[in-house]
Picture (cartoon, rainbow, N blue to C red):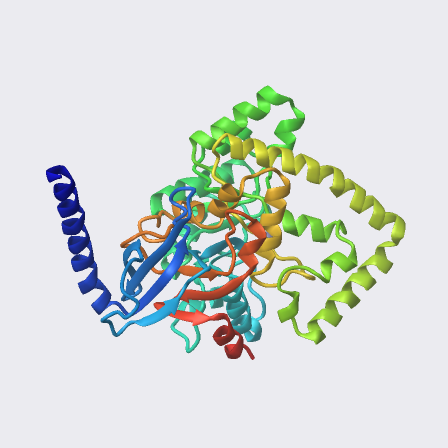
Length: 430
Ligand SMILES: [Zn+2]
């Protein structure tokens, strides 16, 4: 009896404490999600029936929601029953459209749950896209214009190029190709000196081992890996392990390939994620471009392209699964194609390809959340849903840990310190 009373007392005092502590946080919160299922992403779990509070754009509490239905708070209450709250996603390889389309482009990304963009084809005017605007937009990481092999980088010119890029406010130097090893060495030396990352294509004309140890931060399009694979398992494993030891991230951009190489029938393209938000005029333009491209190339060449990539896609899937199994960091990026790449929504098509490659739903979600945050050395603030982190969140109508396609069912997005329902984002579009 005494033992039972003691247990009851302990439970009661625990409840009053946790309620008491949370009560003051609740009264101060600006937003409170009620009865929501939380995907923290820091581990592979779904926390059922949670209450989540947000103040000044930061998550101030998360706990089981056993609170009375009426709360003493001025907060905006968001009912989350049967919904799922998770960190916003990042597209780590995007290209911005023309300036006049940028507002809709940003809003479309939010509509798709993409709250972070890493632009990989920089221009000076992009720096201004970070300025405050009268509409919400994703957080931006901006690359310089892509360097190419036409440019000789001496010690001096590499130094000034990196120094100026840093001063201008770019977050990384993008490399498409490089003149020679000496230019690469000079570039990486300057990169270390000014602490400005270098990322981009795998560079065939730099010795593989040296390249992977150079400090290069991300490799796009699974570059290098298929070639290593051709040289046999031991070469592949040695090079992949070296990439892992040097903390290189891979950004596969598989969706780009499947569109560019005519892998998808037109009927399938017309049903891609987000097509319902694309203007009829744009849809017609895409259909026309596809028809013209097909005619220009001729059916035989289109088939050649198609078959070539069908075969290469199998290899891409193989290496993607292998590097994922090795624990190499993968970051999701789509490298949007000219046609049928719906801004933001293409990330969902990219994720479906990771699923086809054999990655688990949890690993797929990490490629767009915690991995990009780690790459940006920003995991203290982004990438997972935890107390103290930035409220960079999406509210979904299904659980993507159970079915990855639920990622396309965005109900609302929390970004730039405010919550926006899908309908509100749609209304802001022009
Ligand atoms: Zn690209």
